[in-house]
Amino acid sequence: MVAQTLTASDADWAEAQRREKVIRPLAGCGRIPSAVAALAMMELGVARSRFLELVKRYREAPCAASLLPGKRGREKGDRRLSPQAEQLITRGIDEVYLTREKPSVQALRRWLRHECRKASLPTPSTKAITARIEALPPVSTMRAREGRKAANDRWEPARGALEAGYALDLVQSDHTLVDIIVVDDLYRQPIGRPWVTLMIDVASRSVPGFHLDLLAPSAVAVAMCMRHAVLPKEDWLAERGMTAPWPNHGLMDRLHLDNAREHHCDALKRGCRTYSIDLEYRPVKRPHFGGHIERLIGTMMGAVHLLPGTTFSNVAERGDYDAEGRACLTLGELEAWLAAQVIGPYHAETHRGIGIPPALAWEEGLDRRPELMRLPLDPARFLFDFLPCALRAVTPNGIELFNTHYWDDALTCWYTRRGQRMPVRWDPRDLSRVWLELPDGEHLEVPYRDIRRPAITRWEQKMAVRALREKGCNARNEALIFEAVETQRMIVTEAAHKTKAARLTLQRTRNALADARRAREVQARRLGPPVAVHASIDAKPAPPPTLPFVVEDLQR
Image (cartoon, rainbow, N blue to C red; front, side, top):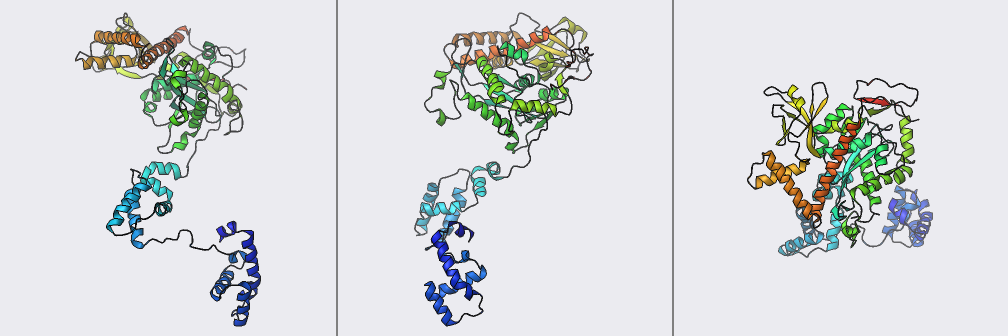
């Protein structure tokens, strides 16, 4: 009756009120006299059965709505097929339609046509079949055709949420392919889409940092993004000719990640433990826990779609747009553009989720922090603490890692006994040196034993080993490995102006070696141990604290 009252017209309501005036005096009578009933039926213009039905309806619900005229014809959902046809349709839906192959309604009808011929029954129409499918619970239909996970993501209510009360309380991170094709630095020819690792401060929705790379996501990409997010960015911005402020920095209390392989590596866990960062992982099959970083990625990609060379979000949206032909930005230029996009439009415009700009929310979030902001004790070493680590023996032949020998005269003091190993850190972007971790926590930098060897990347070394094995050569021979790397580099360099894959390989290697070289230069420029930074200009330098981080006064 509720649905009928919402759809009834003014004429229907007028008829109901007219009926009520006649039936209301009679409904209270225990027995209606025949003469009175005859007059009422004549006034209403209905037969005896219809009159008695109206009286019964009004007695059950004494209001005008109970007397509204109903629609003529069959009621919606009334089925006219034979029981045998209904059974065939039910069996066809269960055995054919509700399967992971997701057949169409027409495929189900073809199956029914075959079965109906065997049973000498008429084939049901597509409309009849569709009506019975739509009558099924949507969640059970999706679970049968697309799987339990898809059904849960679509229909189950979101339980639980991420909460952050102040700035740097909780930071989320994730990777994505950028919807744009970049060009190489040398030939300005397209080389492909880069990856970006983004971080977002959940409390303020601000972006503390990001990392752009041509390599697929890895533990090093997470470490590079961590360094960019945690350390002050004045020098980084100055290198790119940018003067706008980007005040977001500091060690986060919690880091929230999805369950990707690179997020569970020992290097990341070890680095987070060193700086008292709690690692939290997204609950399995609960994608809404990554909503903040996913929305940030969507916002950034929406801005990227306005750049030349964009691939848009899908093929249909791209149409006949020539992304490679229009590509003109190098990786460095795209990195500077993304930084400007974060500092300017994103941080300055009002965020719909919090109602204020993220830049203002960051300042307010700092004021709510229960303790002072933390900074790494040694900024030059921060990335170093997130590098991969392996246990190796120290012998008179030096340290062997990836079939390459490393030597420094200081190793003579640290020879290991039989079966003993010492931690050795390495940077996959540059294998020209490793770092031996000493018992007192210090690190000894150890270069190649043969310093004439060129700096190579870990993926170049892997490719060389694979090529030697395919040729049946000794893949553990150090000289052969470096010869193979140099040969591959010559081939790539000669082919770079011809093929996109070669240009991409060349650019990856150049970027990786340059990043690793800049990191070493920053560490080399550091003079003496750092001291705590305080807002007061009269404060005297404090002695180095014993904790793995220092405390910086909040910017009030």
